[in-house]
Length: 121
Length: 337
Image 1 (cartoon, each protein chain N blue to C red):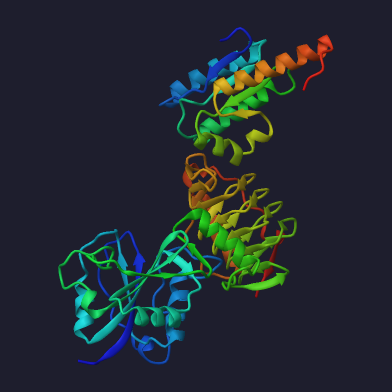
Image 2 (tube, chains in turn brown, purple):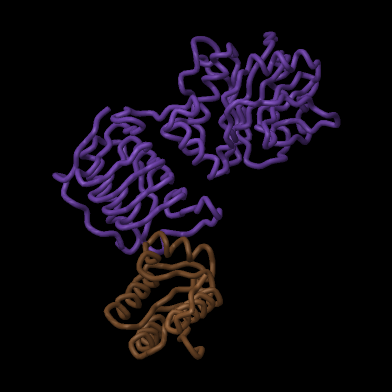
């Protein structure tokens, strides 16, 4: 967790029991976090159907709440998969956590500037 | 020994070690090339690139045509080549099936004769196209090392600068460029099917749901099925025996034969082959089958209605039965070309 966001590593479970436990932990974090959440896929090489179900679960968890959910693909392969399943149309997808944090920081600077009445270039 | 001035060998890339030269079939020798074999390469808009080359060779007037396969670059010389030469062939046109090129073979042979070089290789601006002409003295004897059934030479072959239309079909992105060019008549290749509207080609026995959108330029190959709400095109090619399920969008992409695409996908600038997708911009290959997003289906031979039934069977056989149920047959419209 950073000062401004919660970073959750997408579970890389090897069996269904482990996957269930990780799913529960991830869902709890999504439910309780007040900060923007970045789900990091850098530990995943690919996504199977259970991963896709879990990802859709994550998206539905934050839908209708004030929580912001961002995805960090970590690799081009995951980025392509997220695009193919159209998740990138629902949730912003970044190449890395650093890119997501950088975007978050820029956005905060911009909104602060707007509040202060400073014109942005 | 029968004297043949010029013969041709087409070398088909293949994973299997078929290293054997097929004897020319009677049809090749005399009346014409009657689709002797098909290459292991996937079709492009229904066209077999092997046949485009063999047709070109035949039209040029070469009746002695051999087809062989080469599993790897730098293999041992095929004994068949030596056998070929012992049959009295003076000059060999060798075509490695890695490109589609609209080549004037007469001009190539003329160039080769004028240069009086034992070997001529065809190059375009991006390098070798895999086509060469070599004289008898440059073909390796049995057992000698050669490069992909070519010749390891210690001299510089003449270079024939080809400036016409050529695409390397083993490169997915160039293959997609060829698809776009063929759909827009920017090259001589034409999709195999009926042009139902401008730049919109449909093969035989295609089933299109009434709510499916087809945006030209587009090709949908024989016996393929496009389900409700799917969008195909622009610049998309669905080869034969494929199923594009409900709501899936396919743009600037190719789906190779016998591929099933699950509902709701967005395929852009990619090549899908069974359960694998190659992103053409980054050359990244991803596994769609693990996520139940795509799979390979058995080839179907039946009529359009039969195709739907066969496709239904295919879904029930897919791993984990992850794919959704099939709409009723009543939803389909059939285009017979």
